[in-house]
Image 1 (tube, rainbow, N blue to C red):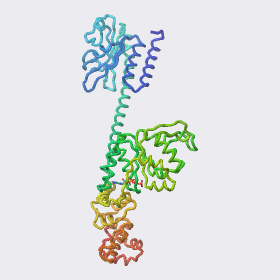
Image 2 (image 1 turned 45 degrees about the vertical axis):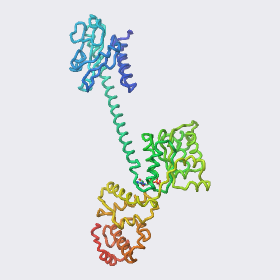
Image 3 (image 1 turned 180 degrees about the vertical axis):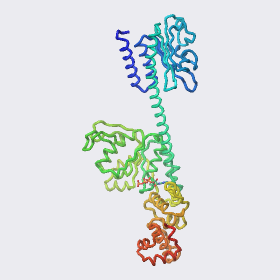
Length: 511
Ligand SMILES: Nc1ncnc2c1ncn2[C@@H]1O[C@H](COP(=O)(O)OP(=O)(O)OP(=O)(O)O)[C@@H](O)[C@H]1O
């Protein structure tokens, strides 16, 4: 023991312990070191820390210094049992001047010579969190008078309160970590559910083939190329491949290669170092680095410039790249899924797309059929979107009228599922009677050609139908205001009145 004054030694001890408690989040390691400091920097010869297990109500020696492993293992008490048990029960410190004279002292953790020793004093203080006792801190020291023991018990109580604080902080951190892990698992599960092929609507032969292909390829690390017109669900398929692979809990990073200007796409994909270009005030990871371990989805890959095509080819071949303005070669483990609505072979013939890159991407192509090629899915999809948007917009739309169904089936859907989805959402918003009628559908579906009405019935009936839909549409958009609706259609109010009578429409319905 050095010759510093007692108070300075105590302050040094408290300082060292507080530093120790700050150092690591590993509670076990920290508590072991605290107990060691206590013995090494004071007159104490042995020290032990117990914690109460709330479930079993047993008090267990967690850390000790000066105790053998088997002595520590024996250090288990019931509440009220022995001095440790009493301290937990009462929350009061206990000072034993001579352990040989104490009946309560059980000596469960020491050799017999210790219990008989005339010259050993023992201190035990509670570790409390507010009113609750969570454990004890105890020590042996060579016998001294009560006055010194009281002082030392006070010092130990300070250490015990520091330990309580550290335990509380770590418990809070652990609980928060646990909460985040659970939240993460829940979100992952939700995402997975959302993108499973089962949730992609379609029963047509062509879609069943697509589902089979997803199943075949998802598990492997193969590069996938999804081809198909805009709005056919290419992104949905890319999601399904990722979330059905063993990378499902790793990142899925999407890049739209067509949406970014040439000078940004490189830093977006590969990142940049600080100062690489004006405005690069901080270094930044690119999408490939962010996707490490997971999947990158390169949408509109056909739009990449020749320079970027070369860089992408290198990542596909060597899995390496450099950040913009960086010298270090970065290696990543990323699965690539690419998609395009372009005819890549045509672009190769025009010298706009590299053939070698095409071969690298085209390992496992999935062709998405256009909606025209799978008419049997139109009604399934339409019903699905009616349900989806009725929920989203909190309206009660239950069915699609027969004329509206005819129009949906006759239309050629150049915008594919996306166009159908938008069209149904608009119709759901417009419907007032829980039914989607023909006049809720956009004008592009209303032409004679689109509706196929040119061959059905006579010309007059077809024209009457169309006129009725137009009158209804105008009244709808003007909330039943006859004058405004007449203006919209370019007819006089008198003509408007005649048409409303002819078709037995009640304008008040639209208010
Ligand atoms: N089979 C399907 N079942 C349910 N929804 C679908 C289906 N196919 C497409 N959709 C929906 O249609 C919309 C367009 O799909 P997606 O964005 O995947 O198409 P895309 O082919 O990637 O389009 P683009 O080439 O324009 O990027 C999305 O809202 C998507 O949820």
